[in-house]
Length: 412
Image (cartoon, rainbow, N blue to C red; front, side, top):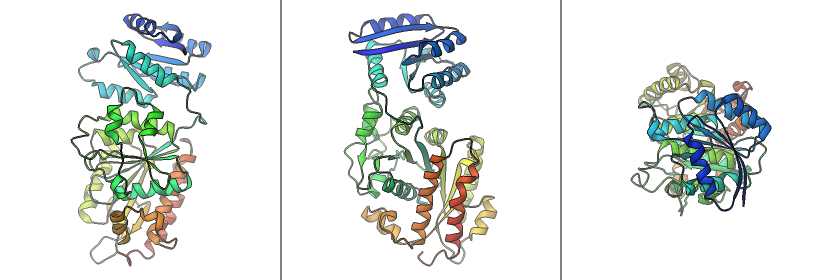
């Protein structure tokens, strides 16, 4: 028997009929339903009624949605919050994925599409009203690894950071390979996953936090990995709204979520950035790469992704003749790298054998030291609240730069 106190905020009277009809068709549902159209009445009902489920009609009035979500989380932290919408009534300049993405940003957990069908309604109720995950109230932190240039070692950095975290936080770290066209995380971890993002997509109608963890492949380090599909064709239907759901579920299930991305600034990467607490921008000290990354900074600025949430990783650094030095890179970009990983041939061996570099490199190895500093950085990010000075979390990265730049390329 599903027990529920359901509060519905709506403007369309037909929603009342749809929800009542859907609820009446569920034999094992014992629910009390409250409907409100005025924002003030809805907010008062949240406090007085203490609902287990809040359903909000979603349209272009995101201010009201934000207010209701915030009031609900303040008054009933464990309440489930759903959005209901009619795709046929959206304005011509608002797509369904845009509506969902904006709603997810505000704290909506899942959606009901109108007209509401009883099977969809019961599925959402089962997913959202099952015993809520025991947690301190803090969501896990998302760190994404991005670049607009392929072949710079972005995946290597994300994999080693994730494995390094999992070494200290077994079963509490997720690595999600969102490089849908050419994901390599599974290969570089010597894994043959039975399930990938495609399986999550195929189970999207019943996907919840529990099922998501079941779809993960567990690495020997204790890292949980959701691999990219084996081919780009398999991933053709996966969209940015679905990836938003995946990341939000992951951060409710894990303390740390590391995301690898495709080297392109598209809607998928924009979605990932929008949910990321921090992004590690990976580059090399090669002039064409630096030129591309400099333009990438401008895109991030236009996207309003705050500079204090960005970390610059200068990977495979070499001081060979003709290569820009760290000072030259800093001058050209107008930004000092936060991490400088010296070139090391053993990274190639690690990729070929599927043994992460960080898990077997000597403690004295300079590249491994910087990777461990990146692990510490992600852990530090997770400890800091949004109100704290973001420069505090850069303490380790500054020391990583100094440690690396003293002698940088003898192993390159």
